[in-house]
Image 1: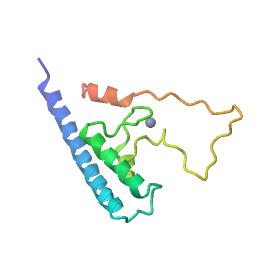
Image 2 (image 1 turned 45 degrees about the vertical axis):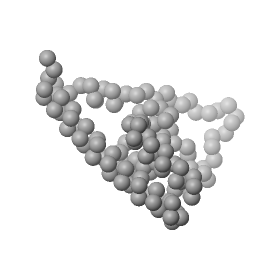
Image 3 (image 1 turned 180 degrees about the vertical axis):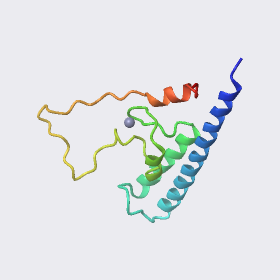
Length: 131
Ligand SMILES: [Zn+2]
């Protein structure tokens, strides 16, 4: 038989997750409205149609429940990172370094890229508090 308490616990986490998603959805819709009306924000490199497309893509990912995972390493993007840029598709670790900071030289000395593994999420969602 399934452990009712852990299911309940799971649902509570799910509720919080949904609440956060709703908050991000609101943010995205506000940004979408702003981008469509031509009021380009001062922050972020996205402008005009490109920005609209990015935001629409993020909303579409939400509808398909694909929202929030890094497109590069597949780990879950932290909520506060999404709050700063709800349309983002990668986590900070995978994000491209900002312009103005030269990319590492191509003299064959590229630093080894640590292979990120989808770790914490799987572990934490599976095990409950069993102390
Ligand atoms: Zn990543």
